Length: 262
Image (cartoon, rainbow, N blue to C red; front, top):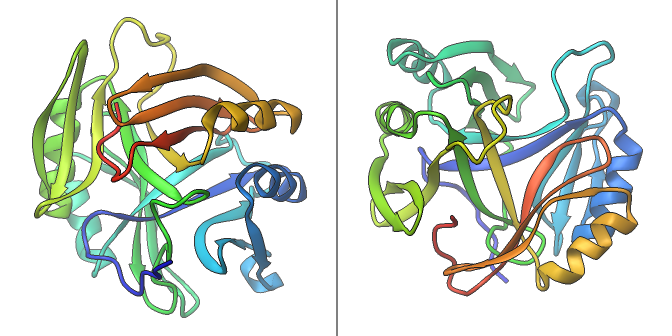
């Protein structure tokens, strides 16, 4: 059981959820993923650290009243200078939506959209350094952007975050893996005619579970929905689900060691 003290700048290092039902979300994800929670003070709007074995795995916050954006899991790329990254995002065709701004002494953040419309965040770590645990049951396993133009998206993330895109051969799927050195940092999937026409580009978070079939039963017992029933891939068995408030994510029982999802 290892603890990550600091992430390499560039790849994603954190995920969080903004939900309309904070207490309900803690009950749902605690029951599904076995998380325990450290709920923050009022000045942090009671933002909760979700823990696996006492280590920070993700965050959950209350969506501000009157907000128009949907409840969704967000992916944050690790960055050593959020202001410089904001300039690079603009220069490479992206759009800054909020920030950069300080979150007390925990870090500096921004939210942006890539040139294809997928929303993501940047986290410049200070006191909070991102996920302390990954690739274990209950923790994040993979990050993937599903987009209508995967070449444009991959080029954007490579330029902004110093990553390298490599074509990944998956039968029937147009897929690229983003790399930081030899290590996979995420995936870029081309959405085709099989995807709902009104579904916008988005980042998908994968959580590791010991038994995906048992987990989707739990999803439904807790009030969530199964969007895509479990199916096998070369890297493990997975299923796309949503919590009771519509935030979608993927559950995956990987074939260790972990490898790019599809």
